[in-house]
Amino acid sequence: MIDISKLLRRNDNKEELQTEFNIKEIEHNYDTIIFDGPISFNGIITNINKIVTVEGDIEFKFKINCYSCNDEFEYMQKMNIKETFMQSPNEDEYPILSEQIDLEQAIKDNLILRLPTRFICREDCKGICQDCGKNLNNGKCNCTDSKIDPRFEKLRQLLK
Image (cartoon, rainbow, N blue to C red; front, side, top):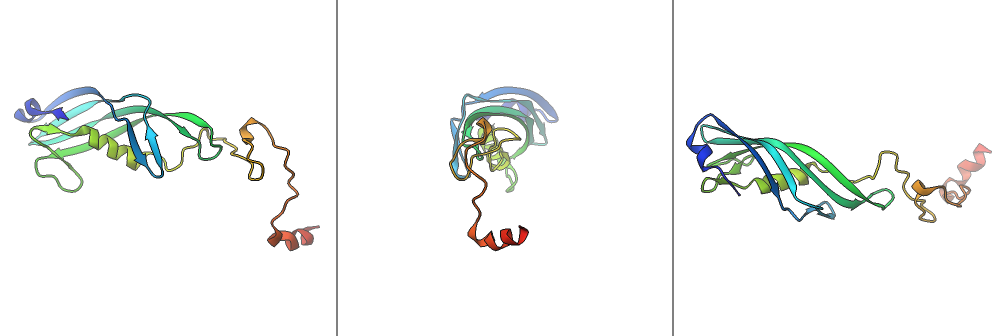
């Protein structure tokens, strides 16, 4: 929780905020993401007529397995967030509770909504061989391309 009591007493005021959050893990799709360290936030908190806006960058990293080749890799990212906090929030805003805001929950929500659904270790990841399971990023496998789905056998004969 971030104490904003001084900020609420002054209208049209901004304060810089640099802090870290020790979020250990979040559930994302079917993965449990375990962070390698704290998530850092660097931004500005603004109060205009008791409507508090928090805008800034979060930086984080974690290890995860590649969806394509299954190798573990380190995923690092910096993302911009902008959230609004109010005394009587709508569904798109967060509440101000006893002159404090729960920025950690806003960060978790942004991560869940904005992280990719599939994590790929690199743009040109070749994945694994469907037959033998070899990681094709480490070289070709010894499988032959002569295997064909029996449903396409007639098409292959036509192409001869």
